[in-house]
Length: 197
Image 1 (cartoon, helix red, strand yellow):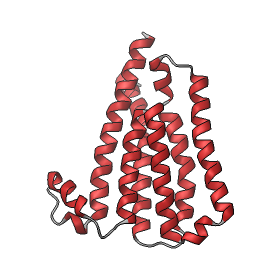
Image 2 (image 1 turned 60 degrees about the horizontal axis):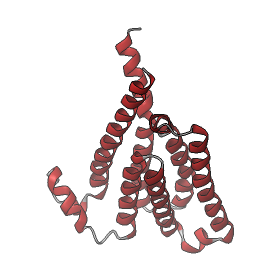
Image 3 (image 1 turned 120 degrees about the horizontal axis):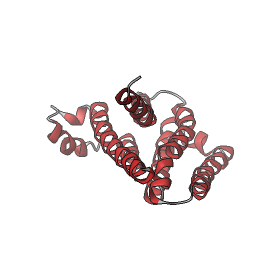
Image 4 (image 1 turned 180 degrees about the vertical axis):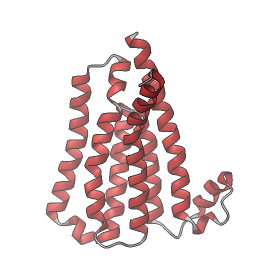
């Protein structure tokens, strides 16, 4: 196998968690818009996936910044572990059952967006963009009648009648957020390569 093929394989391997993150979010957004019953359970299963992807994709950041990887790991475990603990307590109290399927899902989405923003601000810039994207999805699910924001976002993409195409707009925003995250990942990989040579 040539060096360029190895680098391409390594790059695809590095981008795969981000693909899973954004594609999974878009799929769950579409299911939530379809009022699929018990959708909050699926979002609940996706939260640990987000945490693990956050841990994996930012591992190189700790090295590039010269931080201790042990402290980085401890910070990630504290943040995502505390969030999972809060979700477990809320579930045990019956909050998700009291809210109902879609309201519980929207609440979970917005809480996860805030945690992703927190992780992004302190540990991994890529998660800031994911948290903003997830917050955007939560906003559209919480207030589907207020889709004026879709018109403004749809204009640069030249989408006809974007207010009535929220899934299309979410896909477009996901692609933009993914590209920004991929650029940040590539710049981190470049920093790591420069530091190790």
